[in-house]
Length: 497
Image (cartoon, rainbow, N blue to C red; front, top):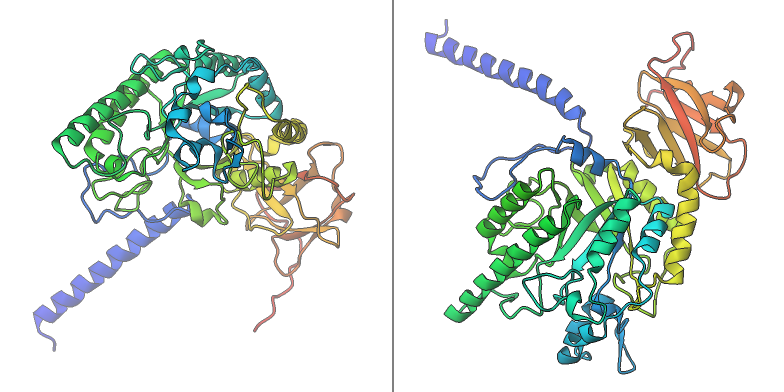
């Protein structure tokens, strides 16, 4: 006979196992509702880490989540040299030319005296974005050079002191608002024109005093933007990787709170600040800081697991790495089909896709970008239903393309880019469901009947679709599913191995 203490220990073990079992029974179904989500860790107490776990569920964020396609515009003084100076070619991104050893700093800093974009037409920009299908735009209010395209009262280095004089930012905001395209304001923390800015940690008393002035200047400009342009939906930050800024954890966190108070519903990505251990984007517990992940620049995730259950967007250039206007594109230049595929992939993985444009010093959008915008727009005009208000479908990825799902209707969209030689598409629907209806998005009357849809007898939820024609461009097929498979169909036993 075992002593009472042993029985007590055994009972405690049983209770512990039962508690663990119940926790798993609750936890696993909960996590299944969030594909790609990872367990949130709370091992480190943080004052300036993430202030929210999970996605925002308010109306403003829901609108952001459903955009699908956006436009980025990089425009400033760097558009004047266009990647060249004194006959020399600058191989870097055009907006960084001031940092190039071949570019005299004084010469660059005086380019504002030449900034007079006589061909600039904000309404034309907005109309082109609308035709392309963009539902939001990110515009550079101030890049690393510090030049402001709005008449900021906190510096003289603005468009107000250029030959152009007018408030270009207001023209852009008003034009895009009129087209129903939401505006987000890009703002670089780096400011090469401000005497107090520095990338390394300030060391001397004078450096620290000067950097405090820079911080106050930065805060004032951000508040000014929100007050002067009240229709802007969010702030898009850049240049926050400098050690001096990373160390401003408490200041940046407090400033973010102030900005959000000025504009309820304001959307800010994960770039703005670091936690107290210097971690950016994700804090030291692995939790996202900000409203969506901004780590996907000129690259895309490959699986839903890569985005960790977070909102995100991809910002993409047409050439390999040119944001501002560079008169000479070298290397691979993406086609509209490539960009449409990137957009489809982004939406299929619960993200948005943002395509960059770099107008020249006169305010013209270059012909190559205009052509691409037109071609994307022609595709979006007839296929936008597969992009807008859509996201991750929860179905197995197939080699022929991508699958999106409407958050409003529950319809699935099969976006075909790589037609198999057989002409047949393979798809696996959710277990316990089947295909109710299948038809072309462009021609809804073109319905696929039983002879064109074959169900696998071994897999059950796997189907083969025999296409009616071979598409010459990305094609969209709409799939409406049933809630339950046909019980009358006999399934063959799977092979035992």
